[in-house]
Image (cartoon, rainbow, N blue to C red):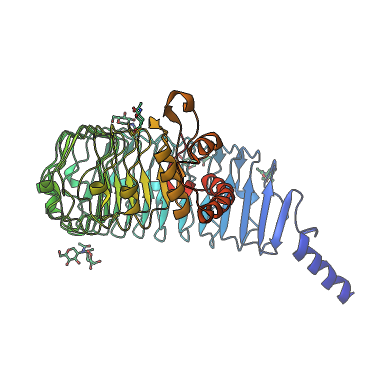
Length: 512
Ligand SMILES: *[C@@H]1O[C@H](CO)[C@@H](O)[C@H](O)[C@H]1NC(C)=O
Ligand SMILES: *[C@@H]1O[C@H](CO)[C@@H](O)[C@H](O)[C@H]1NC(C)=O
Ligand SMILES: *[C@@H]1O[C@H](CO)[C@@H](O)[C@H](O)[C@H]1NC(C)=O
Ligand SMILES: *[C@@H]1O[C@H](CO)[C@@H](O)[C@H](O)[C@H]1NC(C)=O
Ligand SMILES: *[C@@H]1O[C@H](CO)[C@@H](O)[C@H](O)[C@H]1NC(C)=O
Ligand SMILES: *[C@@H]1O[C@H](CO)[C@@H](O)[C@H](O)[C@H]1NC(C)=O
């Protein structure tokens, strides 16, 4: 008898076929249960169950009687189950409940009288349209509250006043048109209200948020950065708003701010960000900047000014930026790049200048560059002096320019070059280009060569792989016995370079 019992327990532990594990459920252990495609909360759930997960079911209404036996329940997760309503007091007696997640349902309000033990409440993707102060009454332990993608239209202090331990509040994707303050949430670290309809944040909103570190208002209609932001802030996201101007004077108390995201606004100029002494990341992509920002903070490591209307890059812009590692200036109208403009940036490793109007490769770029992207400019030639000193360069993208010939000396000065993109240029496939090909192959550089534009009889041939051109140029290549051997070896390398081509996605360069 005892043996049989042991056997049954083992069986229930291993594959959940015990009488205790309801149909359509699997019971990983005696305390955790996962169920799919139910039409009701299973009855007869063991009273020791700690975690109950139900998804893709049809459970319109939850009632108190469905939970009365779950005396040890800590986590209840009900996903995508069409739940429309929860009877009053349903969760009240679950005094051990810590996590309640009711995602992707059709709830129109926050379930009433939640237990004081609750630490995590996630009600994302429902139809909740209003919050009441009573919804969260007594939830002194609640740390995480998520209400993303509902229909809430306003937020006021009384709604959240009980949540003295709250650390994270997510209200993205609602209909919020106004917020009122002060929110008294002394431990709040993360707050996100992305994709709402906010026009204005009142100055009083932040006065009692003294622990706030991460704040996002991206995707609203704000015309100014809110005033009185908490001093504790590390990261501020204001992307996709209607900012025309940023007044750093109002932000200079933000000693710890290190990340500022302002992409997709209406900024036409910027000056004075050096007041944010600890800023390391500044994103300004897709604005209307006609010039690079003036007086940038000296600790900046990443500056993204891509997709603006910037025409000139001068040394003055970069004088103090000794920590800069990543500079994105792609998709602008840069035609003037002062020689040595980035010489003081002695950490720069990544420079994006694709989609501009450059006629030549900028002179005296920093020797620390690992990636240089010049795709889609109007560069006509590669000169030795332009690439001289780029001893760390690993990726060079010159795709879609107007280059027709390759200066071998220029490329020989790049000892670490691994990827070279040359396609989309009007190559003049002379036999000296073929010599460059042999050298590049011998160096082991992965090259996208592209097609010949001239001479007429070689048009459309791929000069890195064409056997036809190789045959025609054989006598020009002065093949000695030794280099014939190299040629054999190179044939083998042809195959391996194809393999490299297929999995070099890690270089972030799309194959177009
Ligand atoms: C809840 O329990 C009642 C009986 O107590 C039952 O009739 C009903 O189907 C259950 N509802 C759900 C959604 O499980
Ligand atoms: C449920 O609670 C709400 C507010 O707490 C109350 O207005 C409502 O009358 C209650 N409904 C029932 C059926 O008790
Ligand atoms: C700023 O950061 C420092 C170091 O992490 C911390 O000690 C300090 O309390 C922060 N200041 C504020 C106002 O939070
Ligand atoms: C910000 O800068 C100040 C001085 O410039 C420094 O004392 C402080 O530690 C910095 N805070 C952070 C988070 O780096
Ligand atoms: C280039 O910039 C324009 C204007 O900001 C933007 O609409 C476009 O999407 C950008 N293109 C790319 C490839 O980033
Ligand atoms: C290609 O190069 C050859 C040899 O240098 C030159 O004679 C010819 O004009 C060039 N063709 C074009 C289209 O530039």
